[in-house]
Image (cartoon, rainbow, N blue to C red; front, side, top):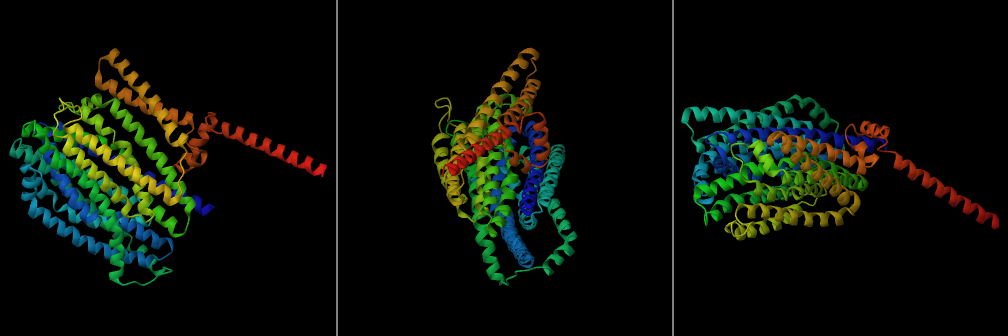
Length: 574
């Protein structure tokens, strides 16, 4: 019993560490996006060049490494769960060589094919320099992913958290420095500035790899001791181990590839489709709004949720390896609950405050509020997809997320081709808004398929009142109170930005209060959260928790006494 409790706490502690890291990463990402979008000479056009090149780079990166951390962590966690540290280390070494070579090959292909890709596929020739600047980072990310996967599998999630934070910090600082230096040397050349911003990504990945390698070297003695103390080791040939790694990493990478293809559908169809009723320059600006400002803000909730998707893979794998189905159900249901409670308020808040948020963050490029609102519809589906995908991978259902997302991607492609060429003046969901709607439809279909399979796989049962009704009530109250507060302060003060900040602040406070009042979390679930026991005790003092539980206990005792009394009477009659 004690062992299970410790495992539960370590799982949530790892999730908490990763969550803090992801929040920092996203905040830093927003900072440099704000800088680039508001920078004279960059703006929405610069975002179009930057993002189109980055999406192609992301596709190559997915092929070489995206599924690697989860694949390696799954295999290693299974070995560690049964005490086979020697087998775990062998998986790590083989994966390092394999994906290092694959990453190097992808770097070379992107470097040499940058011109063809930018002109023929993207139809944005200015993106060639960005592809060249990004190409070396594929190799460094590939080997970094293997190291992260090794430590994730050993449930040491701090390494991944620290490396992600450092990488984003370097990227933010270097992006600003390089863009400023380029603007001074070359004048305001948008294409060169976009290439400089992407060069910062490459330099940041090299520095991140340096940190991971130094950390790994510092633990060589500890790793050697673990290998010596190994038990249950079953020697396998290199070819067999490589097959095991590829059998897990390829399906996981396919999920990532489908996600990247989803983004590349926009990069290849939006500008092309918009040219039917807009000039090429205007089409690029519209794509820049979607891929720059909107995508940056819409993916922000993923930072809160990515931690569960990452931590669930090794956690579920190790629990499955020892046949602990109860732990799997508890962790999955709790993770889904947190995902819903994170995704819903972000979705509703961003839809309500779309225009004020854009004015607050992008004062020099405020257009795109309707596109932003439509894009926000996909938030709840994206975060749920993350969590369920991590669970299915942990359970060994490798192909399910890839197939379900593949179905969604096909639907998105069809909707993009149908909706984007329509002038929004004729149909409001035409143009870029059509691409945003197609993305929401893609993730919605994917989530429905994945959830049905997950439910069947582990016999998952979710209480409708707890998982749907109460969260929607909380979000509705939050939305009404916060937006009315925003309008009130806007009328009284006339300061839009300050009113937006106050309105969003009130939204957070009201939402948290309503969650506590509605008692969405049980006491056991509160204890799963870091410092949750202290919070629960504090709420008990305020009589927000515990009172109902006591009443239920008293009723149960009363029923038990009644039953015992009836039994006694029956026995006496006998």
